[in-house]
Image 1 (cartoon, rainbow, N blue to C red):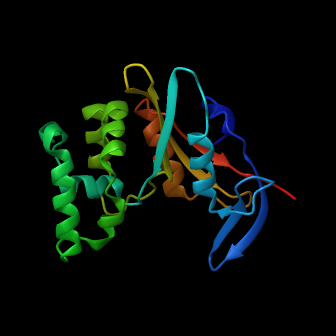
Image 2 (cartoon, one colour):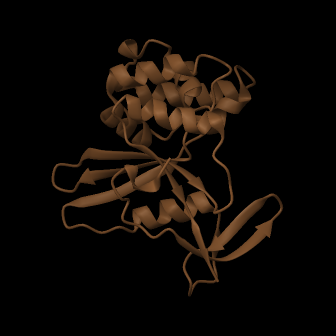
Length: 200
């Protein structure tokens, strides 16, 4: 998927100071920094640093079992998701998973409340249902790495969301990731690849 098929994120794709730590690759946060971070966190940090007089920028990393974990916590019928009780239900699901009930892989995929609220606002019930239904198939994988969103500073309402898969220069996009990006875009969501560009 070409990088210019979606609106620009208006953050730099350039990274510096590559180093390997175990199986993970890290880069300097910026050329003058001595702090390193994994590629997904670099993109997330840069997004959060964006400045606009009428907007605040936020986001989160998404777990690979996001939609299955939400179905576990809130049920498979998105029309029945109790919006006023979401925070307590998410916490109950976390406690149950810690106690060994359900798939333990779901624990780190349950989003924080603010992320869930932004997902609900951007996706809406109908599209969330399609994502939950799609991922009820155990053969389906490919949740994007990040969900980046912006809120109107005056009315504190989320108005923009981007699903982003982050890749290093030589890292291939899997067929599952490619299919998921295409599926999300077919729903009218904004999903895309951002490929980092290394500089010495």
